[in-house]
Length: 318
Image 1 (spheres, one colour):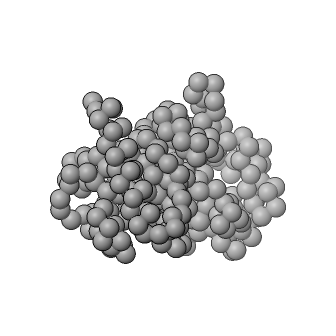
Image 2 (cartoon, helix red, strand yellow):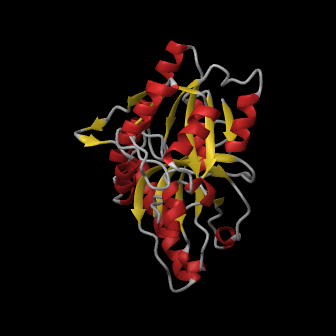
């Protein structure tokens, strides 16, 4: 898979004689937050058409996501960070991911400017897969009908995305996010097509966990997480081994945390995890994140959390 960052790099690539986009592509556009079953169906549509036309498959995403640009901290929490999204799309065998920076300049694009500069001049798109409610352009005047009309002249076709439902519920990033926030992990997994997980690199933290007898692997999060609280987790390491553990995800209010973080303690594990990229799979919610009056009170609650996590694991072993 190839990652193209920014419109400038896209145009440079499109001018190369041996460009993978020389004959065009089959593309789709969206946030793809979580890469849930609905997204996976869209990806299958794109790949199927790309194979039929012998063209590369392209997924176009934005950083930051548009609602993050417009709403800042009020934007909905992310289901996954950009790197995890990229790795998930790679695993889905997408040929090219185009990541465009959503800033004031991009915000100012008219609908026709976006079609001309990005879809036609940049991607040379042959076939586009988007929802019939897709809107774009600074005045939101761009829609599915406009794409169809322009495509007839410019030489590309447009296909509507297929709606995916599970138990009568439409699969969307919003529905997954709501289920996670309600601690309905199993139902969220049914919409994702897999258990919810966060993947990230272990970094040096404040060493508080080690000082109070519960050392943790710390993963800094670039965005507010969809989950907040204490969870029983499964952790997969770089070497492929898996371990049971307990995790706190959120802002760590007791120690005046401001940067979102994921702290994971692996049961019965010795060794160092610094620098590793680990997968943290959320299995069961224990409690909400809360602020304690003192470190001693936090330490006592952590001991109770450990007991509760071990009891749940013993009950659900196998």
